[in-house]
Image 1: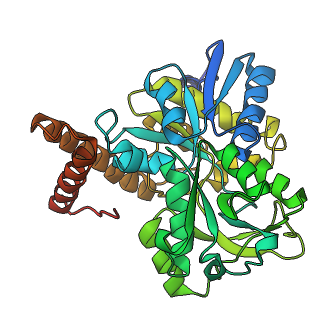
Image 2: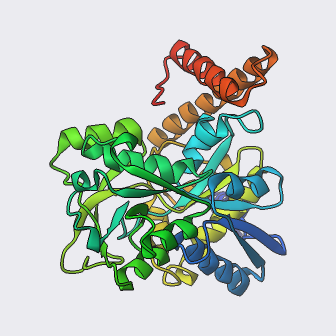
Length: 384
């Protein structure tokens, strides 16, 4: 005869098994996942391709990777539900804030949220052609600096790096290009002298092996005033020592900056379970893509950047909690970011109800003024 205690224990164990199977679901992805990324050959594109291969090998899901030359082009398919996820850079922050290319009637602040992002051995900074002789950020004064039309992330990043040496756009010669790849071909072909990228990006390697060569002017971490200026322009940057990429990093690590990249981005409106499954697939399938492209190893769940500038989607939060990579502190911080997105969305709605100017330039000016007032009233930071 089974004792009551044994019966109770059996019932408890059965209940635990049911609860566990319910809480930890098996990954189920749709037959096809469409992802957008930076141009072909960039580190973000290469990592995304590696993830796509893992989706096929592990889950039988076909992946389409759409390369796009600027932030607007990367987000538009996601916004129209023609893509599932986007490999973004700092542009995701500008989209959330409704600034630069997103401070226009067609866009405004976007409820973009993140799943996983990568921080690895690489850095993100301005690379100069070695034949320019530039050894410091200050040496870039008067040089031709590459900008990408419609890519506020890249352009603002360059300005943040220049700010380290107390330089502005007025101190350099801005050369505009149609896309990231076009910009780097311009540097290789001597149409520009420097541009912003990841140390592991394909174009950086191309510059390294070209007759011009490559050099990464350092941003010494001991220069606190310089870093304070960097963060006034790019609040998402953190100090980082690069140990891999195009250059002599193995023997000579370079102190520079970084932020998570790529940042796998979704919209807050996307279904919680869909984003949960995507994030869970990225976590469980890590071994299948971590060696597939330089920088992919930075997507390890335990190495995720905490409390960044854009909130994590609730579906991704669920997956991170299951993986033991989420804390109460992060929950509180994330909720505050979600509240910021709500305030910006409401501000945008109210602004457009007030008959803003039909002139594009005046429209942006009026929006930025309204945005500033709303954030001030809410006691929230405004870095623009």
